[in-house]
Length: 131
Image 1 (cartoon, rainbow, N blue to C red):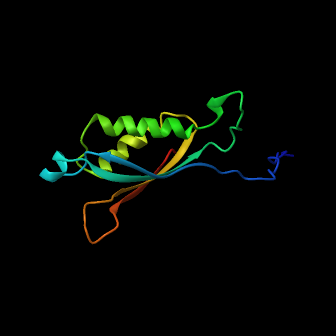
Image 2 (cartoon, rainbow, N blue to C red):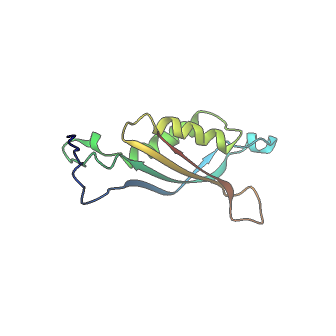
Image 3 (cartoon, rainbow, N blue to C red):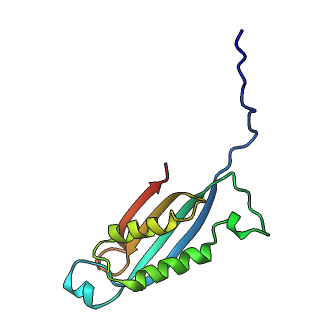
């Protein structure tokens, strides 16, 4: 006779998300000559899903993703160089975010606010999940 063990059924399923909404920075981005000469406003909306089974502990800040640090890292990243494409910038943001072991998924929405006069904004939305 074979004994089969069942996992204890969990009562809850968790999802933890850090949200950064409407971070607006003036950065060098774009392929056109005029975009390389003058900074333009780009709006960042970011959702970062973290490991739901690492419980927040106020005595151990490594148990949470600090949104202030995320903003500072993005500010530093955008000060360093000109990005020809928003997609390149997004990949660099992903690379930084996934260095933190808590991060499981990142959803980025990047919008140029002043590039096309007839629009409020144009941009991209990209998500990446750690497998």
